Length: 397
Image 1 (tube, rainbow, N blue to C red):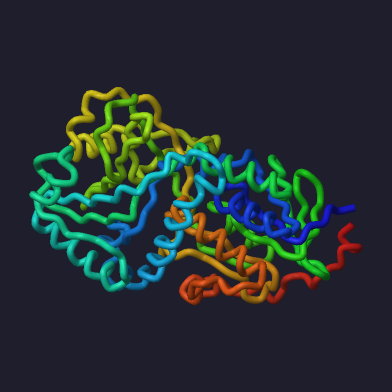
Image 2 (spheres, rainbow, N blue to C red):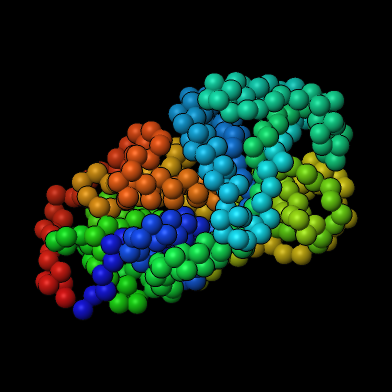
């Protein structure tokens, strides 16, 4: 006989664990399943950046219309960072959280002009940003290269430690009464009378409601119910150096090159920016030496003082994305009780607000945000007409 729960959360990353914690502490019977270990995907392998501005690379490639379409996401990012600031105390865990600000640096007048165009859209959306000239850059970030002639400062941005955050959320969820099953991969999901039936590696589970928090696997989960989501899985990698004396205070980006650069509390310099890793023929994800070399070269060009640091580790990860970069939130059209909790590209930053919105919806509360731009039916169609009719739990037993 299948185990029963009110809410089944699919995905043991930062969103899934945060949601399980939020629901369990309000008395909801919640079960979370994860096909590998908790935080084994992007939630435990990302660079820990907290973003609050329009990402510059897609802005350059997709233009101002895309940026204005993306602008509603900025309110979610701001709300999420506010929630982040409360998590260390709520979780009684040092998350290495700080928000000293993000710095997008430019080396040419043309790059500065592009930054100014983006900043105008951010200001319209209510995001606090400040355009800086060379003197302004030197004042707040004297460590950047002398080639930098200006940039953009976004004071809300920062970092947290992904290696401790999701495990802390998982512990809190378990302590509040949630049941976390890992490894427990989802083999099949079907609608039945009264909700859903999930066949998992840990046995069958019936649930009144299901939340898809599966990240890069979210499209596979939705497809089990006949829903199509254009979720892309992108292999990326991150580098970290040996500990060094405090140097890089901000989250640093480059106006043209792929770069995210920051320093952890232990002194290690984290170098990322979405450079691709490789997927081997056997399916194993491995770092790409060319990406590593080019990423490090960009980082040294931005902050020359890191050139003599030794590289300790490079690791790969899979990040989920969509073409429009917008979150996918709320109850799926045509499948009552099935909810999406997906924040592509910025999932680490957006996890707290994604979980909070989803928890509020499940608890019958107003989410506090206009979710219209983030509905899945902006690109997903309802279940196929030839999908099988609902089955009863007894028929599936």
